[in-house]
Image (cartoon, rainbow, N blue to C red; front, side, top):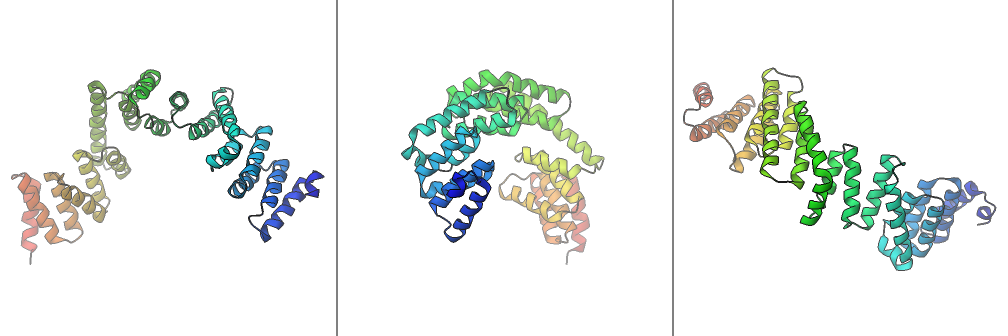
Length: 330
């Protein structure tokens, strides 16, 4: 304590840490560790100390949070507060309101860099998750940053029709423009991401039609890559199948790429899963037969051929495989 009063902050912090080795939850030592590290400018250590202090002495933690605010460390103060907002609210309800106001002000300051503003928005929404206006403002910033994944996550929080309508009015036009631009420029994965985002706000037939056109073109491009034996063929089919897990064409292409890469067990697992769900096509069974044959499962391959023929009596590849497999049957 004496070292802190003498503003010998680094030594005071070490003294506090020594005390905490003997008594890890000593609230007095935690309080002085937070104050001393704030004095040295070690904000991460201050946040850590105040987080520990919060569990044993919320009023002392609230005092430390206010000290962070006086130092201009709004985001650091919010990080401590968000560990347990209810405990702080019980001892200092005004502090929650103050931090909420400061966070919203920080988020609206366009002179700050985007990362700081996004962090302020996220913290403000953690305190006020139902604030539609705040969330839409954050979505505008994410849209300007082309951050599709974060934008999708925040739009999914807008469950009420009125909230979705407000978001659509603010964001839909620019989202669709980005999606169509990517489609024209053959940036098909990005086009998919943008238009899928647009569908969250506008499930109209025209939007679904654009989504389907993108999928059809992606399937065509990936099929061509496999025919040409592109080095990244498996990577392409993995992304395609991740985006369209229920599409038989995407599943077939991914199975073919797995077999070409000699990942036979993965191909068998993929195709048998489709069969168990009742979604398998004749081509799925043909690919399953190929994978089973390559992994020396003769009976599995023969069975898959018969399954293919049950769905398509004139499946020529299945017939050709059977003519090769049956003579080898014991």
